Length: 455
Image 1: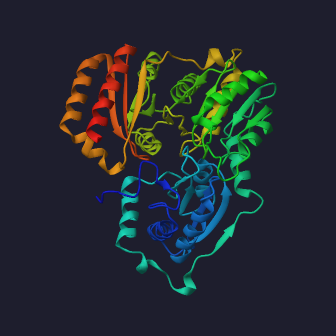
Image 2: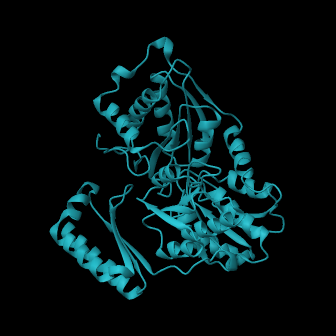
Image 3: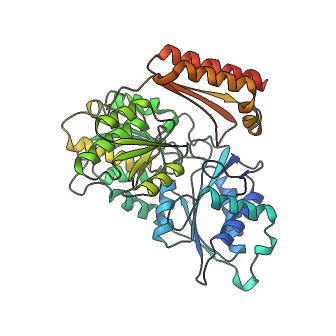
């Protein structure tokens, strides 16, 4: 199989207008992806959405030109959450879907996420094929002048309206949010219109934050990376619940009425308990990644459920869910995949599941969504000058010895995880165990050795 260099754990990502995130690359990617998904003799179509970054105005027309050049029609929907593109790809019977977003990253970055006609993110193998087409040259992929594709824009927010209805239909029809005060932080991102609308239409008293995008402020001191602002607002206005989305709204962090932050692991635990009790949970367990807290695993075991772990990346979670017949999975970071309703992580949809549980219960969020006590866990990022040096560092003898010694210290009482970031020039060092001091010592020790090797 071709080794991928362009695609990471979640599509292509980088600093806008710098290699590789350039208009030239987007043009070639559009041509290669369009060619790959041109099958049969029907009119082929791609749907393209984006978040609110300034660079979306550069990448969107470049991608459009690439798809048109290989004979594929383009439907442009403008700002919409990533899960909205997954939904529209299927709803519009498209051959491929594209989302322009760098998720939780700052506005300087952007990314390209691709979805197949089934609404699922592409596999490593298909991404490698597309990358190979880009490398060998796209000149031979052009169609004749009479076969060029066409472009049209869905006017009046039609795509967003369809997504709003789609999300609302995942909320129990016998329930309303009347009487609940909800703070929602949209990170000045793709959900700045749809998230407050969904909550209001379901009856909530909505206090919106992060709903004034200007092309530069996406994720800036707001959203799921900075949930403390959402939590402070919840306490300030006496809200019942708070939710913070990231720039493309495929992940969520929430808080209770006391302002206590609730991460993705606790969200998965709460939804798993509710679905298990109602008989809606498939696969007798949950799928998450190697980053999920050991406390989640122990809690699920207490319910008679299992936890299956994958490598980091919500598409790997999704793939395992499909393979194993699971309908609930996600990541500690707040990607939650509700397989009963969606093919990818959907922060807003996950928030509605928690709100449904809150409406059904006579308990406050503070009692309902703190299902387990997390095992002490620490994560430290070692930043690199060049991401390409990560594997060389991990193969260094000094680093291997430090990792082996750390694993021996933790033994059976904890876990050590060392991995390269798929989206940034980082090596992530994570450990967890019952002894917080030992966890901190292990993480700092391994990180120091990696830093020394890098120097």
